[in-house]
Image (cartoon, rainbow, N blue to C red; front, side, top):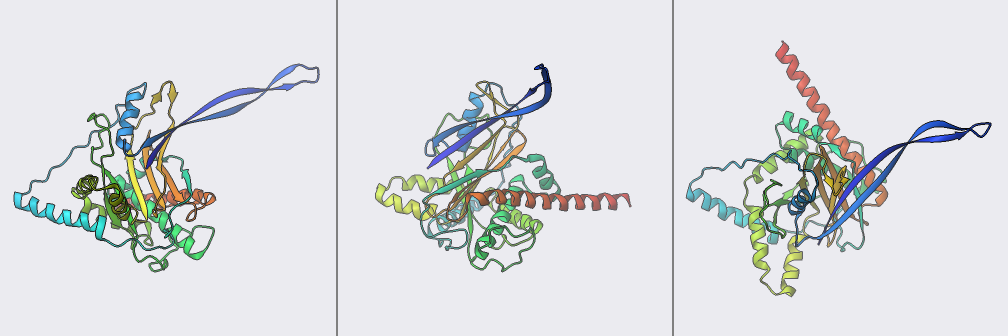
Length: 368
């Protein structure tokens, strides 16, 4: 697998248009803004570098130093030895069951039986991270919960559009439970960094040190935005402090000792069973300069492949979150991708409006 990173820069200049007078005299006209867009594309072998490693390399290569990354403090739970051993045993069983013994997501509006032949790629304009954090604070959930809830809402509306054979996404809130018929099972495979998210800490190692968890979301896609957010938070809370990502990473390393012909089928049997691959990669929150090149925004993606028709990679940088989608061309046309990003923004806007109403009710109650 290849991992692509794209760095963008928009240079805005003002130039004065010259108008010719009656006597051939040059007169100054209106000022015109000229936007010069530049894009740098880096392609990495995903086996050599994961997202966090690339972000750290980006910070090292930058001309200016970013000091905005806050180191997350790990909260260790104090549990007895027997409790830890029992938890590890249960989590090991869950990791094996999820990765190798659970059934594949059936073919449906978001998944084909055939392998991906051609992919489409698009990325959104950066969404303000302040909007996401505002919802997270009011609803007492994590930023990742908000991003994931909006993403699942977007895919739910896309599934309904494909089921109905329509060319437009259904309006927000128009779906009811049971509207999407072919939705018996649908999993998001969420990739988790095992290096930690402190970008300034360099362990001096390359490689692809990531694990994953499978999140069943089939019953959440048709829910209203607020209910979906609360349900997403309930699922992810169960996964916090889980050892499943580390166990999955360890199991895949052990399987690497198998002969390649066997490893190929074992890997394909575990990697492509879900419907959507999703990842949230935090980046520096100040604008960096790369060899004199101010980086205004960045995006990242991995090609959709196998029977996994959708890869969604969310990257936060310089106060914004960019949503990238790589899709099977048979599942999502290039001209339909813009509507998906509009749907994502609508989901976030609906959560914002609910939170503002909730905050208004709270202030009114306090005043009384």
